[in-house]
Length: 214
Ligand code: G3P
Image 1 (cartoon, helix red, strand yellow):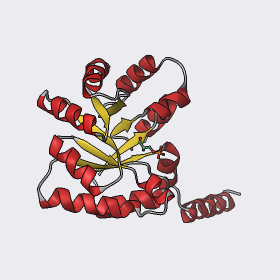
Image 2: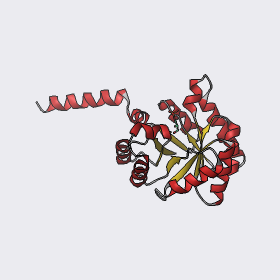
Image 3: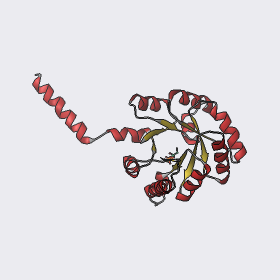
Image 4: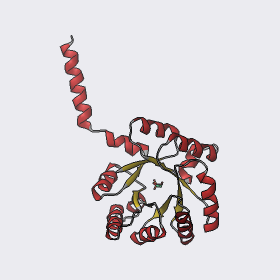
């Protein structure tokens, strides 16, 4: 299972990289806005810091605009994946980029049929947003199960990239379902490492070691 970091923050990227936990990065306009500054320099720095795929999102609404932006964003590195919204125009852009051999990540996917359309258009990744679905009383992980089934039924090579992850259970369920990738916020990635019994056990070992050395 691939772990991507859902961030535009370089400190978080460096920390996850040092732990060997990060296979790639996903960004979006909101995450970049949290960092402030010049988004071009930020994107370039992220692409240099990361060995694996880095998703950079287009903001144009027409396919032509998205394709133009994709050309611009691709210049930041060989590892750039163009993130495209799940719209009718977005599918045209996805198909055009697929024909040119450019990797794409179709984002803002909320239904299994949207995922199927993105796969048919030739998307490299689809990003279903589980946390936002849970937030309106739907079952985000059920969407992942349905997409996994559809892609397996027809051997689509498109990867299921679980996005909008809110807590460790989302990551666990994604792994059990067989999602290819989870894009995880740094906070959740840190929570995956922790266990209260690890902390308790460590405190006990340290206390006993101190007793032994008195
Ligand atoms: O990067 C896309 C996705 O992970 C966004 O998540 O937290 O804004 O719902 P969120």
